[in-house]
Length: 214
Image 1: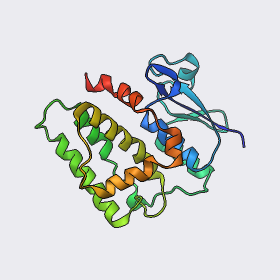
Image 2: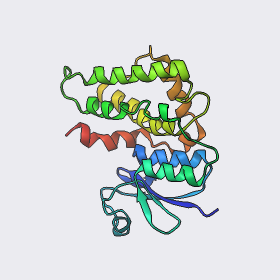
Image 3: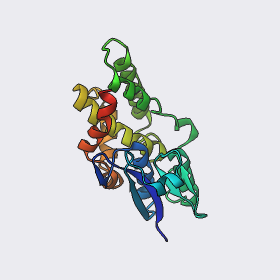
Image 4: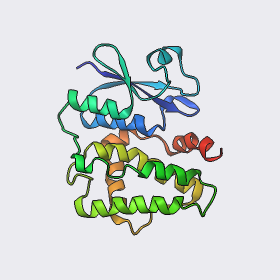
């Protein structure tokens, strides 16, 4: 099988190292879990090469090369294409669980950027993590039970960014009382696919620093 070509974000200040984009990592996780060989092209998003802008005019990563030679952006679209082309092992999440945890990332970003301790953003994140805790308590260890699925591969990089940046910038940690969430993150972060594709914590911090300090 010829390797799948995929463009992902390079690390801030280290253009030859895989970077901190959670959406890029989601695609790499999908490829790893399906044991699909891939050719990873690193894109310095602060200095995008002309050839990349020719295939991704909006300059967004990740992008995947299709069999017809065209390139497609958006991790939602890419992972769906990969699921259809490489159906085994199946990573399909049942529709009733597909939105579990979907509000955690935007809620986390709002809290991370917040300069006002009374704006409710911390409580909002707490509530979203509580909802994930309650779901995992009833259905875990993964969102769909015993087997990992697409929703977990979407959440894993986002949760890694959450724990890394909130600890660094705010000294904030996921409450210990959320035992199922902690067990879930431990499961995700120690899978072979995650260990192979995870960014260094310092690159995650460097990637978020301009947004946090804006």
